Image 1 (spheres, rainbow, N blue to C red):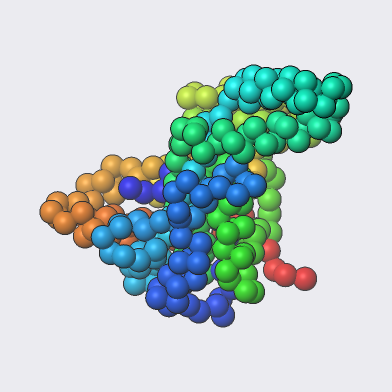
Image 2: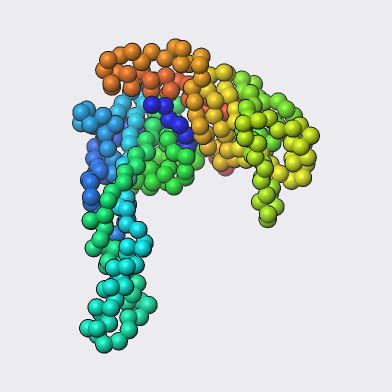
Length: 302
């Protein structure tokens, strides 16, 4: 149930909204199956638990929302096949060969005709508003997915109370120093997943997966212009994760010390979910605060 990947944003501390008010805004973009315009993706908000009737699942000052994306499976080969057949019909009717512009228009028309008959695939992306600690966190490993969330919210929240989360020291500079000194910051330990990349035009990279790099080899890589862009870490023996140079947290996992105190025995699915999420809220907030300190604090606005 925990988020697996964290794309972290800051909320404006002065921004206030109730769960009911946010739900009202999200209802303007509620997901409707099979509704496509010129966009090949159909997007809209769905409820975490449909039986609650709300698009916002509130746990105190934490609001969970879910964006559903529907995409039609329409292979290019199928579109091309139907387009060629249609082009032959048009050529017979008009008496001359179809030009590039006309062929492009035919292809778009064919795709629009075929799309309603194509199979749909669905993808859900969850996001978490923490109004107490002023975080917006998207459970996404790719920037494109978090961009979808932010783009949808930008259409209904005016002004948009969201900004990038940036620290004084960049993750790549800090991670390179931790590796060079063979010492993680307080409350953290370095694990067995490291990636180094060159800053040069070649963008050469070296990755050490599931084993600790040889200290001499590591020192050589760092002194020849490479920086650390990905590093596996553990925080307080409670959470393991991978930090990258964009300040994204990947492969988030609660460790045994948390699992031992994780009580999910409730029969009610919603209550079980709320218990697990409340635990995640507290642990992730602690992790983000510690990570911010390790990166010399949050960057101050000019």
